[in-house]
Amino acid sequence: MKTHLIFLPLLVQILLNLPIVSSAQNPLIQTKYTADPAPMVYNDTVFLYTTHDEDDAQGFKMLDWLLYSSTDMVNWTDHGIVATLKDFKWATRDNGAWAQQCIERNGKFYMYCPLHGQGIGVLVADTPYGPFKDPINKPLVWQKEHWDDIDPTVFIDDDGQAYMYWGNPNVYYVKLNEDMISYSGDIVKLENKPEHYQEGPWVYKRNGHYYMAFASTCCPEGIGYAMSDSPTGPWITKGHIMKPTHRSRGNHPGIIDYRGNSYVFGLSYELMHLETFKHHERRSSMAAKMHYNTDGTIQEVPYWAETILEQIEPFNPYRRVEAETMAWGYGLKTEKMPDGRICLTNIDNNESLCLRGVDFKKGAREFSVMAACNVDGGYIELRLGSTTGKLIGTLPVTRSGAMDRYKLMSCLIKGTEGVHDLYLCFKSNSQKDNLFFLDYWEFK
Image 1 (tube, one colour):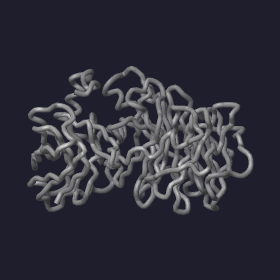
Image 2 (tube, one colour; image 1 turned 135 degrees about the horizontal axis):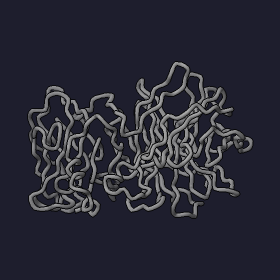
Image 3 (cartoon, one colour; image 1 turned 45 degrees about the horizontal axis):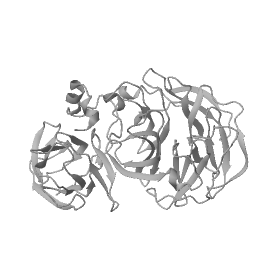
Image 4 (cartoon, helix red, strand yellow; image 1 turned 30 degrees about the horizontal axis):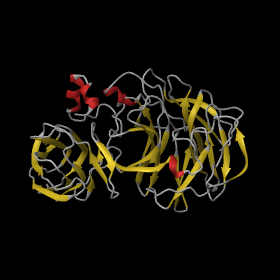
């Protein structure tokens, strides 16, 4: 049994097996602690780059950057680690992979990464998935006289000029060159930073207005914002997108428009609180719909747990679906295998994962999964609506030999017509821990 589950109150364990309800927002990712969400829309997909708080973190223990993607805002696919501190050969610290942002320009993808205490570096890739490489082999900016160089945000204005902003507790910016890996002119410090500004700026333009969202003065920490008629200011503070509450010790905004909706991303400690209310820096990415007034100002968003994140399109099960795709999967883990594939791991008896809003249309007849297994007695129950909902099929997961040997296993199913939340419930007759590794699954 996983050690963290030993300490869960019985009530929480019961709650973990209840169906997902739409009355409150859950952390987007449950298999890892993810912080500083930086969303990017590309090819009609949301790519969510995050930092990574290690499971044993007390303070900030951050070694790499992660990537997730979604087209419906509730089911997210884990693409694993996209960059680490080791990608910067000039870096000497073994901790400090803080809040990053990735942006596309001319078919290239540029990730701006602070290395706490050593400035801000830049990586480049040909796809949003990487691999990302350091094109300049040095910091893009590093003001060695202080430690303000964190939390970069980058946007490209309508005239093609790109800007990078960053800083705690001050705000700085530079004009990036078209190559996106160098800048012209001096580093500019804002003389009049937005009121309540602390860190984590997110700058963008919408309908002729320039916006700077930011983590407001800690603690507690909400999300404030300012507006301007120019990318260089002056910035006029307008208020809070999300007010500080006793539940919001930390925050870090990311804002996008996607398929006719606006979304704000940020942080909570709700996932950690399933285990403990003793404070550690183990944060989780959140998102909520956001609305603008006719004058461009932003309507206040309630605290994450009081919002509803709606699915914006049904999930298609009639294709290869990576097993690390889910809306909820507390207790499970994902891991990159030696052969490069990312698999669902740490699967114990009576754990489950959920996919929201799966559209079976007229009904499926077969379920297949690519799995590796070296124990007997494991199986997957396929249920609709909840972990105790309608049983549509049971798939025994048989031995495949060594744990790195995968084989395709299938079972017949029935009764799947329409749109349902799908639960994969993991069971065992003889083994409680580490039942099998799952690579992908598919319905036919």
